[in-house]
Image (cartoon, rainbow, N blue to C red; front, top):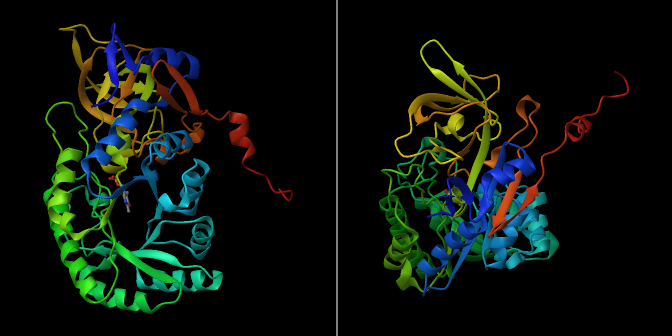
Length: 421
Ligand SMILES: *Cc1c(COP(=O)(O)O)cnc(C)c1O
């Protein structure tokens, strides 16, 4: 459920008409609903009750400081995958003890940043990383709390670019090798083992792969405890999928996910951490755009809109589907037409939808891409020197620009021409 609904024939985010935002901000822009973000965070937190738990929002899905502040104030922790994201979490007021650091390529600089700034744990993904972290922590006279990210070799049955839990993926330590690496970790200076981490992929629409992975984590917990390690936290990663179409998809709900976690891991007495990104932010955001031209091709009609692949790359990168809806509600029984919805970028890949049946649209009409809150604005670029798309946050009947559109002057000033040219 989200808070983007038609009221009096106009699409609203909560109580704000998207047309009013378009008038104030210009198009294209991202808009997020504070109520939806809040609701999704609470669904997860409630689903894990009564287990001790920490929900760590995966910042990489949507990293605007205003969003992080909103979630952090509700009690959310943060899952970061870079020094930059760590600094974002801190800048949003999230204390270090609620930040977990994931990622296969943490540099020594990033380790130092998190160790000195405060960190809940590092999710370590390889032996070389473990050695580096031990060195850095020891040198600083600090202790790094760690989990090892294990790769359980299960098929997440999702898009190949976002599956991470198979042995051919670059992520984690093979679960068969885990006991050996934990034994090494226990002997290393500056390292304190606190738990186990697993994350098998994104946009999973079935609980079975999660359950298979979590069962392996349960077995490993018992083995590691028998080996003498303290395993008090289990970080289960993110990955729960969302419906991208209104019609047929029904991915599992956080409540079912929580029940499955309690069933498979509840008896171990561990604190449970989860790292949802997409399920919190995905359906909490839309990308609003305007039709520039309606172009009649030989055998199709192109809707050329002012958003492009640089603003929302998911369709061209993953072949992802986004529902596209008009801002002015279509009358019941209104005429429909098939459109190829494309942006202005000079690439054929700059296509959002092919032969999509939509109500008839004209130059100047506004439309919205649904489910664009996750992996939308964060992946945006300025390809074709298109200014970085702005972001807007709505709460109740008011809205604020939480990242303004840069001016062309600002964009051009970032480049410097060397004196010898
Ligand atoms: C991407 C990622 C997440 C979030 O995944 P979602 O599918 O957005 O929930 C969580 N943890 C790690 C380690 C990730 O890489």
